[in-house]
Amino acid sequence: MKKLTAAITMAIICFNFYFARAQKTYQPTWESLKQYECPEWFQDAKFGIYAHWGVYSTAKCPGTPDWYGHNMYVEGHPNNTFHVATYGAVDEFGYKDLVPLFTAPEFNADEWADLFVEAGARFAGPVGEHADGFAMWDSDVNPWNAVDKGPRRDIVAEMEKAIRKRGLKYVVSLHHSWLWGWFPVWDSNTDCADPANASFYGEKVPETAWQTKDSKNYYQVSPMPGAEFERVWLEKVKEVVDGYSPDLLWFDNRIQILSEEVRRQMMAYAYNHAEKKQQEFVLTFKRPDFPLGTGTVDLERARMPEIYPEPWLTDNSVSNTSWTWSTDLECYTTNRLIDDLVDIVSKNGCLLLNVAPHPDGYIPETQKQRLREMGKWLKLNGEAIYESRPWLIYGEGPTETLKGHLADMKFKGFGDEDIRFTTRKGQLYAIAMGWPESGVLAIKSLGASFYNGKIEGVELIGSAADLKWKQNKNALEIELPETKPCEHAFVFRIK
Image 1 (cartoon, one colour):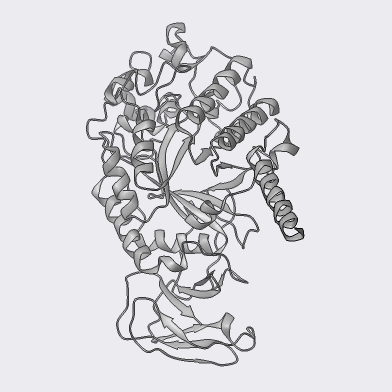
Image 2 (tube, helix red, strand yellow):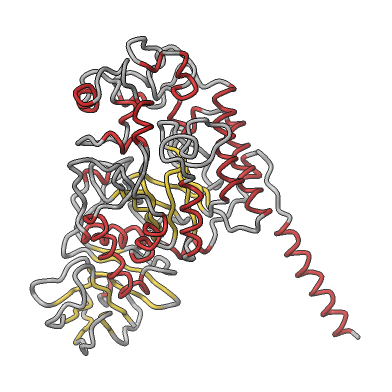
């Protein structure tokens, strides 16, 4: 009887624990929002892909069209010069007039998703709404959306179906806090000031500090957004959450221009929706838009300098110069992209890599090639990446990554002496960024003077060679085989 009573008691305890978890609710307070816990799937996934593709792609201009909707109205800017020469004066042919050109005749969500799977991504999705205010879903609150105008298709829905059908987690990114002041609605020399276009360009407000040509004034906004802008901003988030239940909801920066009340309401709404759906949900943000602990930190074209105690995300693009397709787009090498992934993972991070589809909707072959090569590398070496966790230190080598927002745009990449470490289920991996010409890889962090663990063996993933190695005072020295097992970073199992 005592055993039966104990079993019943334990069952009640387990039930109560489960019920409490299932019934967890979030209040719109920072304290309550700190209940957030980054799920295991995100910590295990390491690599995701998203796509900057929308009306801004349709300009078909050289250079950097990411902010085309804003910069085409800035006199003297290359986007402005191109626009006037190609389409005419901005008071006659404005950004709204590019919308009918965005028809996406070659967009195929299944083809995108197949490519993302081949690349080795574990989470993927589209930009839901960029700074230009054009929603890529079937929106009731925003008449300027991809179902009612442009391609007349629900891009977010099609991508959700394709991504989830292949077992990947689904991502939607939102950048729409930038819409406040994005277009020069005060300037009568543009079509933005016409009240007839207010549903797209926004309400008429005075010129603000952020709207000046000094791009450093991003956050110096005056006047601040009013209640109507905040209402619509929040309703857009709710539409995406309710309609598509993304596993990861990604936010661009500048959300701090919104009131704390609206920010807290949004997070509580998203978290409670996920709880009702029993969904392991991730919300990422750029500092300082939300307090630490209320979501997962995201960096833009940057990375942590050391191992960060909490899982984090960085977003970067296949191109150093642009997030969006342009007529002269140049891409990083596959080697650079793989090295970046390895470095980020070694520091407890995940990479969200942006691709830049052609305006017509297909992903250009140059970008496909890099994604396929990344997938080939991950198929061989993925055991050191997926489900991995940081080691005691992230790595060694002379190269120092740069710090700060957008720092990777000036980073030149890694050298042959750079090594990173990861662990998985007790197995240590050393990932060498290069293949030493001497034929010997020296891992200083595993020298007897620095590491007191016992090394029992060394293997090179993808190579059947019986490696010769020795641990001396200064390093673990590994004699490399004659043949490389792959074209990029080389992964050693240290037993």
